[in-house]
Length: 343
Ligand code: SAH
Image (cartoon, rainbow, N blue to C red):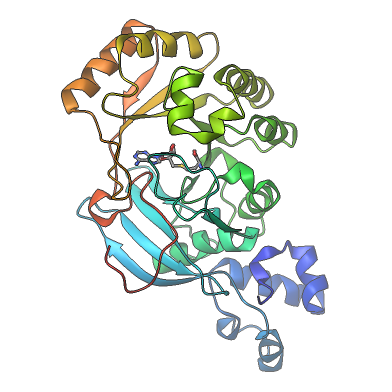
């Protein structure tokens, strides 16, 4: 695999490329942070650009699909030929990009397309950053004029199963000299790897932490999320309380509503207990269909009833609308992909 220039901080870039003097390294860093290819960075002399051609820069958008709701799905090609997916979502307050952190995923949740076929490999920091920079450019943005204001690590992969690359990505994407998206505007979603939740807090990455809960007992969680064999809900609650105490950030729980699985009266009562005593919020979403899986969404009526019951139990919760269903770009529908396939 080619070395990817987006993998590096400014000072590492100087070392890796051997470029001198320092202002040339800055010009390179600024150019690639705006989404330019090396040969497009016109402030660099031609011979310098030619020498840098041995490196890869970021990831390349190969295909895109537009949803009727305004969101867009992208297929990105990595330098080893793997294809990953991501989704752009326009909001009134800015534009959010959902990025992938792994090719495939090891977690194998019963409802999710990302784990089909298992984990292929981790993405590097530069491959995660490359998704943000490529879409920012596609939307007419550059380093100074950002068209992507928010990032969610909610595409394929388990971010905390790729800790080093993901935290390096967080440093790079929020670097003042780079695209400079604040950690406040970044959400990281995890199925609940508690040691790494604690590590993230200790390392000072104050992102919004989302935890995919989807069940209210360890037993029922194990039925749909194999990772529940390793971590209990009580351990998750301890870890997110720690995260809140260190970062001051309210915790988000993701709860996909699955017909006949996680929506009865007692689930609402238990969710009341799980979320008590620290600032947190539950995002309810309808289960999105994945053709290889046999779980179904509940009816809109069941969803409303569950939301009401949560409120009766003192839970702060909202029913979140889903983006990109018609382009298989909704939660749980992103996967390792191939070009030229059907959406
Ligand atoms: N691995 C991380 C990041 C994935 S984020 C995590 O587990 O949080 C994607 C979110 O969509 C997670 O909350 C995931 O549980 C949820 N999800 C997966 N499949 C889904 C489906 N079919 N319908 C709705 N949500 C789904």
